Length: 290
Image 1 (tube, rainbow, N blue to C red):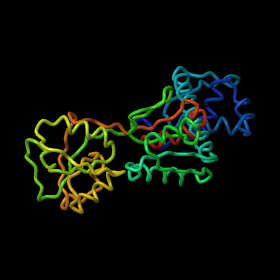
Image 2: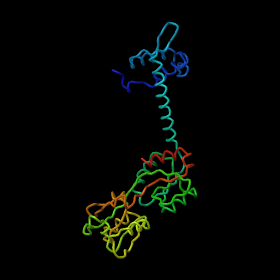
Image 3: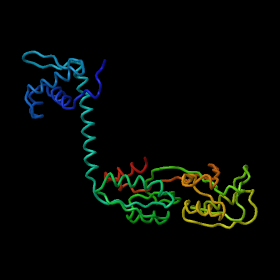
Image 4: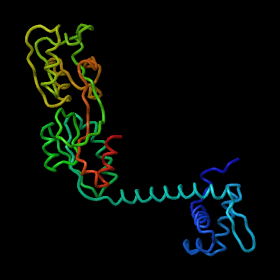
């Protein structure tokens, strides 16, 4: 039966790897500040654990076996990975500085828990979050006032990079007594429609519906959360991001997903390439896209 990973000892692996690389116990003893006898004992115990002879021994010479050569190559990679992992851990723990985030109000519920957990993980980093509309966010990015902008942006400056975090269709929401025609969910719209956000885009999509008659009064609000609250107050139906429907109580409001044909929004993180020159920014980006 092969040995279990938890039976391996990194100190014995390191002693073995140094002896295998230099062909002598003395170098390993000097490197690890141990006696030659202690290094020899560590290697013998490692052989007992792996169940394979790693060196041929004679009174005057130590020769690595073919199995030992193969194991030494794998052990070197394993030790290198462990050292890199520890270095990264130390680097992250010592991160300090300031991070500026621009966040669309509609997505605060989705990203603030991630931002809070990142801040708890890096207590030496000051994180500033500002709520911006799309154009304000892009202006802040270009002026260097924001390191990352999170939202659904129709227009993005040239040269920026993006990471897609989520996608969302749109849904029409309404009170239960305003049930629309199942074949035409937009029939829930009578003379008023609450739109949030993307009012111009939603208006254009609604205007394409051939089954709506008469003029529609639009009530614009800044976030899907506000739109949901207005629907609860019976101010009319609303079109919101399907992604935001987790914020509503389904017994008080009904929702119908309008599907990809009505349009799909991308929630993205926008940033400059130069931002990632700082390792802490790389860490934050990967934390946000999880």
